[in-house]
Image 1 (tube, one colour):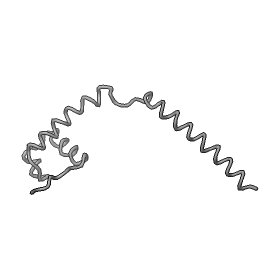
Image 2: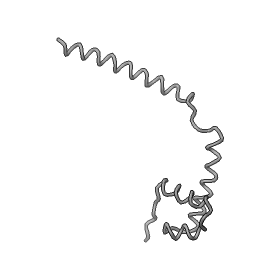
Image 3: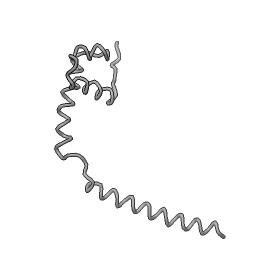
Image 4: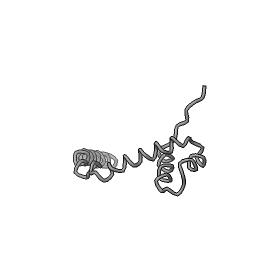
Length: 92
């Protein structure tokens, strides 16, 4: 039984971008990368569908990270207090 090949996201993006450029046909791109032409068309369609999300505003905004920033500031404060305490112990 043949094992399925898996492709990295970077490889898929490269193939999809090449298909979006329109310089070559799907068959030429598929032959170059040794994949099936249907796969090129599928990745191209997924890339086009995904582009709408880039401009729709659904991307994480800096305000969404506010809780994470507060948590990290609390950790920094705790580590600073621990460092001060330990450095005073070394001076003795």
